Structures are given as C-alpha cells and as structure tokens.
Amino acid sequence: MRNAGLLSVTTKNINALKYVLLIVVILCLASMLLARASGSSVYQFEDNIHHLNTSNQKLGSFTINLGERIIAPINIHKNNLFISAGSSQPQQGKVVMVDGKNGRVIWSTKLPNISMTEPIVTRHLVIIGMGGKRMFAVNKGYSCRSPYLHGVIALHRKTGHIAWEHLTRCQVMPTPAYVNHEILGPDGGGHFFSLNEKTGHILWKTAISGWSAMSSPLHAQNQLYFGTDNSFTDKNYFYDIDWRTHKVVWSQNLSHAQNLAEASPVLSHGIVYTAYMRNPPYGMLQIINHLWRHEKMKYFTFQVVGMQAKTGDVIFNKTIYTKRLPPKAWIHQRLLDEKYYWSNWTIAAIRRVAHFLDIPVHFCKMSNHDPEKAGIYDPPLTAWHRTIFIEPRITHILYALRVGTGRLLWSVDTGEDVSNPNIYNGKLYLVNSHGVLFVINPNNGRVLFKRHLSAGSPGPADVLLSRNHLVVGGSSGKVVSVKTGL
Image (tube, rainbow, N blue to C red; front, side, top):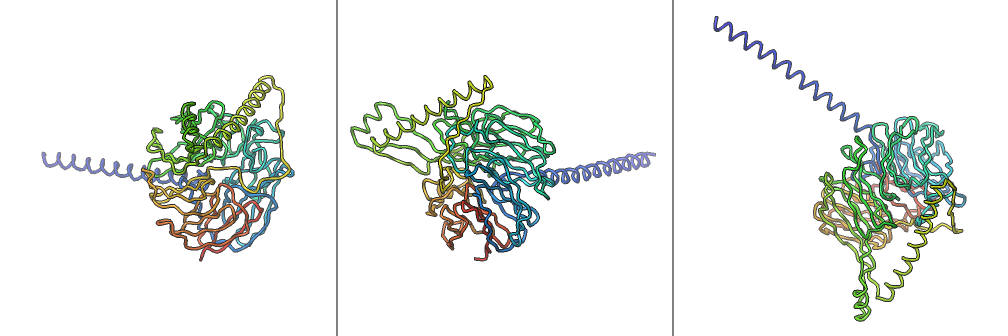
C-alpha cells in the first residue's frame, strides 16, 4: 500500500512537471514572437540606437539629380530608396521613391514646405516632418510662426499620395520615431507629441522646456532620448521620456550650452551620448585680468557628454575642442551675441503676446541665396563596438572616444563636415562637406581611401551602406550610388 501511494504521488509530480514545462515553453515562444513583432514595429533616425545605417539589399550604381537639396539620411525598403528634399527659392519640399537598382524615380510628391527629416517607412506609409524657415538656415526664432506649413505628413508608400497631415504651430525638424503604430517626436513649439499612424490624430503630448532642431529622438526599451535648446532661459535640457507613461523620466540641464538641440544621441552599454557647444562664463574681474595680461579667452568649447540611460547621471563631460580669442575679439563677439539674443528675445515676446491674443504675426526675413552648407555645428554621433565617433563642424576633425570614459583613442583630419560616419564590414565611411569620401580603419584612424563624389555637401546624416554599394545625397540635389569594393 505504501509503495502504491508513493507511485501515485510520483506520477502526479511528473504530470505536474510536464504541465509546468509546457507552460514555460509556451511563454518562451510567446515572448520571442512579441519581441520579434515589437522589433519590426520600431523605426527611428538612421535605423538604430547606434546610427549604423546599413542594409542587406543589393543596389545598383547610378547618379540622379532631384533638383532640390538633400539634408536628411536616405532610407531603404525592399530595394527602394526614400528621399526627402527641399529648397527655399521657392519655399517647397518633396519626397521621392527611387528604384535602388537603377535610380529610376517611381514617384515624387511635392510638399508645401521643406523637409529636413529622414523618411520613416512603415508597412503602408512614408512619414516625414516639415519645417524650418528655409533649408540650412540657422534658426534665430523667425520660423516658428512663418507663413509656411509645419507638421507631420504621411504618404501612401506605393503611390506617394498624401494619406493625412497633422499641422503644428512650429517646425518639425527632427526625424520622428515610430513605435507600435505611434509617431513620436519633439516640435519647435515646446511639446513632445504622439500621433496615431492611421489618422494623424494627436494621442498625447508632453510639455518640454525648449525646442528641438535636429536632435532626433532615440528609442530604446520604451524610452525616448533627445536634446533641446532654450536661449531665453539658459535651461537647455536633455530628456528621457517614457513612451508608455508619457511622462518625463529624467532631464539633465546642461548650463551655458548651445546647440544641444542639434546632435542626435546614441546609446551604448547603458550610456546615452550627445554633444553640444558651451560658452564658458567670465566675470568682470576675469575679463579685466585677461585684457591686462593679453591672454586669450575661451569663446566656446565643444563637449561630449555621457549620461546613465536609466537615471541621467553624468558619467563624463569631456572637452574635445576649445576656441580661443584675444580679449578684444572675445568682447566684440560677445556683444554681437548679445545683439542677437535681445533681438530674438523681443521677437519671442511679440510672438507670445500675439499667440495669446490669437493674432497672426509673421517673421519671415529671407535672403536671396541659400548658403552652401547646413547651418548646423553638432552632427549626429555614431556608436560602434566600444567606440563613440563625433566630428564637430568647426574642428574639421573626426574623433574616436572610448565608451564609458570618453578617453580619446584617435583623431583624423577629414575636412569640414556636418555628417556622421557609418561603419560596415570593419570599414568606416564618411563624406565631408566638400563631397570627399573617406574610407578609414575604425580601430586606428588610418585613412585607407579617398574619392571625390558629385553629391555636394551632405547634411547631418550618415551615408547608406548596403552589402555592395554606398548611397549619399547632398546640396547639389544629386543622389550617388557607388560600389563599396574599394
């Protein structure tokens, strides 16, 4: 009897164990499927958290001219390229779908304003933002209430026909993120918004202190990271917003910062990285001392900062470049800066009063000619293995920094540039503002190859790399696809 009882208990235990194992297997399969579904429903600037814009698609060699400036990265979907472009004479933009094998234009859709965002391609739509006073202009506050339309537009992927548009009071210059059928991003009017993919209707929005220029939100584990500027309060915040709760998880105020709203951040080994320019403050006695000693003064420094992704704690804040001026030149430049500041402050005050009274006020000063290069100083960063790459426009130098410490590994002169490098098959590719392609060993900075391309000056974006071709667009309006077997 005792043996029978033991046998019964053992059989029940075995059966229970089978059920537990079955449940574990089902849960594992479900989690894998959910992870795969979640991964396929997330799109963002330069494809991923490292800004390594690569594709396994096979492309062809060609050169085409779209007739308008290209500033944003080129996207690829099923061998087709999706490109945004724009001009200010007249003020307009367009999105183009191009056959990646031969360069044939499949469709081209005109926009009522320029687009400075990478086209986000989903299953059925192509989503882009509109805004900026004009292409490549340094925004001094004129564009927010300009007569041109700002907002987000969705096009049908196969035809290019407009599916819907969501208009905003201020420009949408950063590339939005696409997460589980929501379009997410900061605008120029002090908000972070979420739109319904199918209708463009607002789902939720969160107030932020400032505006974002080209700092496209980085999406990782339901968090969205981006930088903002606010010249009038000297509070330049870098944000972490939770996609699920719609709330600010943490924000880091980087005082005396400029252009924090320009650089698109990257994430590596639990640390989020961005870059900005800083104006070191001087007291009156310090200024007099420098005048007396004829010692040069720091006009600005270029900083790379690493912050703990979960908490926002600063891991390091490294100065990689310092611009110094003689005391008199420093004072002259500061007076010019103050002139711009107070003129912008006055315009902002008028705009706020007009908005409160619901009176349209337009500030749309425009010059006759576009500048040749983008008015941006802090390009996107790139992360690869345990290295962070950054190339400030003002330095003409590409810097490679160690993840976690910011220690300089190597640097190389690549000329003036506002783009960020891309890495594929162990080689670093970069096209500078003069249209020169550099192929570099990412481990030591040794230049392997140089070649001039006809695309003109690229914007703050990396080149698109496929398994056999490199694709780049620029200020000339040309799109160039060349073999990477260099």
